Amino acid sequence: MPSKLDSLRKHTQIVADTGDIEAIRTLQPVDATTNPSLMLKAAQQDAYSAMLDQALKASAGSFDPVADACDSFAVALGAEITRLVPGRVSTEVDARLSFDRAATLDKARRLIERYEEAGITRDRVLIKIASTWEGIQAAAELEKEGIQCNLTLLFSFAQAQACADAGVFLISPFVGRIYDWYRKSEGRDFHGAEDPGVQSVARIYRYYKQHQYATVVMGASFRNTGQIEALTGCDRLTISPALLQQLSEETGDLHTADILTQPSSDPLENLNESSFRWAHNEDAMATEKLAEGIRAFAADQIRLEELLRLRSVQA
Image (cartoon, rainbow, N blue to C red; front, side, top):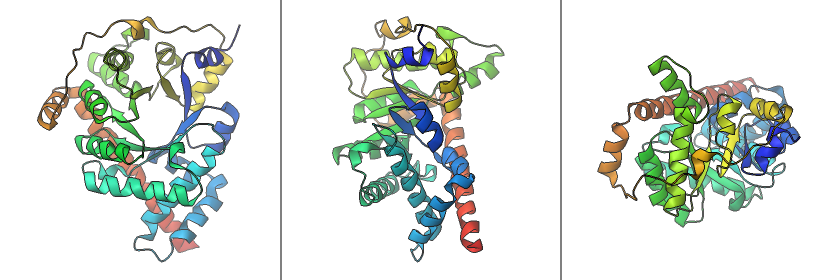
């Protein structure tokens, strides 16, 4: 009997949710995603010391050397990952720009320029942007320029609708953080198809397929393998190395989840800015989790900058 990981690969494209080069080398995913928290974790490991030093050296003399060093490190790590995966790497825009469309556009374009200077073509990179209204509109413009995007921190159906209307390449609706919120709110656990996070991704997936949106649905932020198995058949799933390892050690045949094959009950709806903001605001969980996620990623971005600033002084 095959491992659950091998069985899952027959139905879903596997993406590694990590910046750990060795984990990617071992687990052999198709794509890999990074974020400020994963970047910070990598920067704290000795294995990345040379990469950090090179990033600082490359940014010396620039207007904002620490910010530039962060970008250089992100691109250097991403470039290394592209040598290990056949698909794409996702690199995230600074979360502090989540409500600034123009600044998001500028940062995304500069990240792509850095990748191209490193010899990595833009078709190997996805720019990760928080699913705020400003972020979604920036992504719509970037897609027209041939810069494909991964819209992250997605918790509400309204966010998914707006991303589809914007024609973004891929969305990352979160599972685990939704599960966390409802588990705390209702004081009980959830399993399989009853998990609110699983239900959220499945609803989006059904809506996209029924209304023929090309945007890829990539479930993210898993707490356990049960959530992953419950979304077997989703376009892509981005999974941590620990859960990928667990799936590789367990055996079983997985099949496309029934929750993904049911017809969508949601009619096609195009949201303008005011209707988007109202619908998202009406979802207490999504409103809280989006704000919390932006704050957390921004905090880790600041910690990464502090680490680089200290390293530059000690050099």
